[in-house]
Length: 209
Image (cartoon, rainbow, N blue to C red; front, top):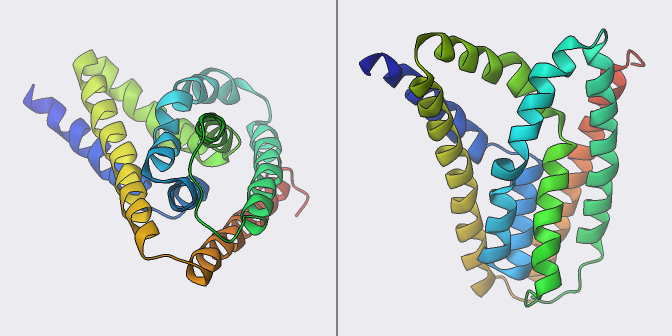
């Protein structure tokens, strides 16, 4: 089993990098935690667990077999840009006060997290270029090593984002009045910037730029 430790370590490193790196999911985790509390941010943070399995299957068995994988990624990126623009609009129209989460808000958190991950080309790129080769290599040695890689990856990926949700959620205590709305608006700007990046990436994949 000592041969499996490199796979676990790889999963940990990649997971930590993804867990704390800036991106649409990270921005949404922080925004939702500030607006509705830690619980709602955590729901966004666990989205990769719910969505990455089908994304991995699509990336490995569908996109990899398409004649034009770049075209598929381009369409996904443009859909992502549209959805991120909607999320940014939601941030810009947030009432200037802290909000108590309702059951509907909780369902919206799960939907937002899942949709954001589905229309983000990065998970597809990760699984097609990094994740799938590692899983294939590990499976040729021992299927337990595949499990070690996946455990290291998702414990650290989701754990990193849950940590951000906790930090942001506790920040609600001192983010009162104008400070709160300024932060939410700034997160909205960040989402707009990600939408612009997704648009540029999508047009590039489609050879329109």
